[in-house]
Image (cartoon, rainbow, N blue to C red):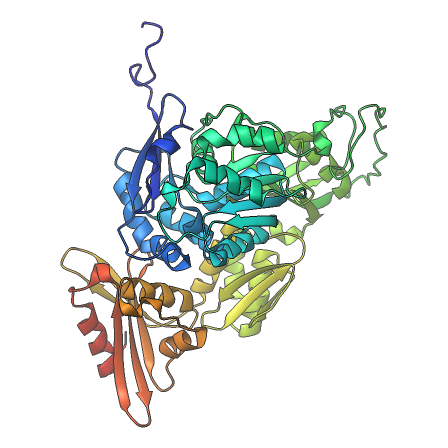
Length: 566
C-alpha cells in the first residue's frame, strides 16, 4: 500500500462529529479550522424561529424535543459523538438544563454527547481555571445567566463585558471581538472566555493569549476540542493553550515529585525540597478497613488504570466498582476498597498517581459493609423498605449515600431536587460530594418503582405511542417550555408565567390535569379541567406545534370530561 494514502483509503473509518447548531449559525467554516485531517464534521440546524437573541430564543432552540429531532437527522453518517453547539442554549437553564440537553442527545441515539457550556466547564477543569472573565455578544440578562451557570460548577466570573446584541451576531468584526476580550479581562481572571458559537475567534486566540498572558477560550474552540476528545482525536490550533495542552495555572503537581513521596495536592513542593520519608502506617492484623473511594477522572483511555494502580500500590483490594456519568469530559469512579490502609494514605497515593487532581477530586470516606451487596440487589431491598413516606426518604438517603432526604424545599452544600411518587418535592442533601448524573437517574428510577397511578396509551396511525399520566405539579418548567413553543412568533410571545400560574394548571383546585408524552418522555400536550364558582368547568388543551392535527386534543378532552381513568 502506498505511503501517504489517507485513512479512508486504507479502510479505516474516519472520525465523525455530529453537530447541532442554531438556525442562525453562520460559521461552519470557523468550526472546521479546529478539525485535524482525517476527522470530519456533520452539521445540522434547529428549525427557524423568529425571535430576538435573548434568553427566550435560547430556550426555544434548546427545547429537548427539537434537539432530539435534529440529532436523529445527523446520525446517518455514523458520528462517534454529537455536539449541541450553542453556548446560550446550553447554559440558559443552568446546570440542570445542560444535563437535560446531553440526556436528550443520548436519548436520540447519539453514542456520546457534548454541549458548548459543558465543554467550557471541562476546559476550565483541564486548565485549573476557577476565576474567569467572560466576553459575550449578549444583553446583560443573558450574560448574568452564564455567570450563574459557571458558579454552579465552581467557576467564579470575576469580570464581564457584553455587546448587548439581539441579532446579527455572526456579523461582528474580528477587531470588535478582540476589543471585547480586552475589555472583559481582569487581573484576577486566570483565563478569558468568549461566549457564543456565532462569533469568529480562531484567528484571534493565539495573539490575545500572548498579549494578555493567559488562556483565551472560545465557544467553538471548546466545543470542537471536547467533541474530538470524545472520539480520541486532538483539535488543532497553533498557539492556543487549551488545544496544545499547555498548563495554564500553576499547580503543586507541576513540580516533579519522587514516586516514593506522598504529597497532599493542596501543598506546593519547592523544587529544592528533599524527598520526604514514607509516613509510618499503623496496621491492625486481621482488621482491614473498608473505604468508599470516589474519584473524578477524565473520560479517556488509561485513567482507570492509573487509579487501580494507586490502590494496588498501598495494598488495597477493590471489592466493587461503578462508573457515574459526570459531564462531557469526565466520569466519577466509585469503589469499595478493603485492606490494611488508612483513608489518608489511600487518598495521598491516588492524588500522586493522578498528577494534578483538584482538592475535591478524590474523596475517601468510611464504607458500610452492607454496601458490599451489588447495587441492583441493594436497590430492590431498599424499595421493599420504602412503603411509608418516612421509609421512602430513609431508603432514598441510603441509596444515594446522602446525609438526609427531606420533604419540601431545602438548602445544603450539595443538594439533589426530586419529586416523590405523590408529587411531593424531595431534596437529598450531603456535605461530602456533589451528586452525579448517574445518581440522579438512579434516584428517579427508585422513585418510579414506588410510584403508582393510572396510565393510558394512545397509538397513532404512524405507529407513534403517546402516554397520558396525571400531573404531579413538578412539571412547571416543561409546561413553560411548551407554552413558549406554542406562542413563538405571536403577540403573546412576550407573556410570562409565574410558577404559581403554571401549578394552578397542573394542579387545578377541584379539577384535574393530564400530561401526554412521547416514548422519549417529551411533553407534547397538556389538558386541564379547571373549575370556578362563577364559570363552572372549563377544559384547556395545549398541543405542541409538531403534534397538531393528530386528534390529541379530542382524545384528552374525552378523558377529562368523562372522568374516565387515564
